[in-house]
Image 1 (cartoon, one colour):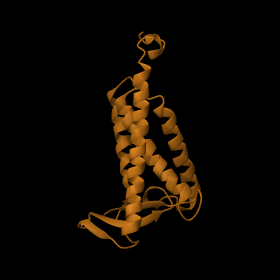
Image 2 (cartoon, one colour; image 1 turned 90 degrees about the vertical axis):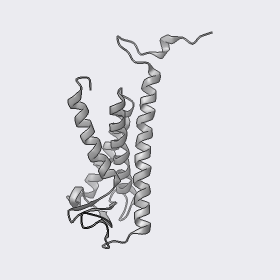
Image 3 (cartoon, helix red, strand yellow; image 1 turned 60 degrees about the vertical axis):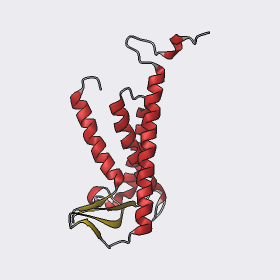
Length: 174
């Protein structure tokens, strides 16, 4: 006996098989988990290995390692509004989860998964790190010259945002 193929596809013209959509959803969530684990793992490494205010040069003065705790956003903007960034990170994580179940293209699965994992990592920092719940500081350790100090999630957010913009420019079927 063969399975009923009618349950394998969604109704409507040009419908994609449900199995493919679930694979894309699973892939999106897997990418998010990998990004989250890599970011949190590198932050744990940085806290165990580096000390605040001490810089270890990697590429002269251009790139180095330096432990920092950031209560604000990029470039320490909004240091007194940590709770706002906590809400933004949680909202971005929830939004990524919702979109993970709606993704229909592999490129978007990668972008949404990457953004979701990075947002979840920052949300975790904000919710559970010192100085307290929903007031936590994000762990940064990648020093870019004398400009700013960031982390893996920051790199992922910028890269995924650029990739998302390129996907939007490339296709009429977003």
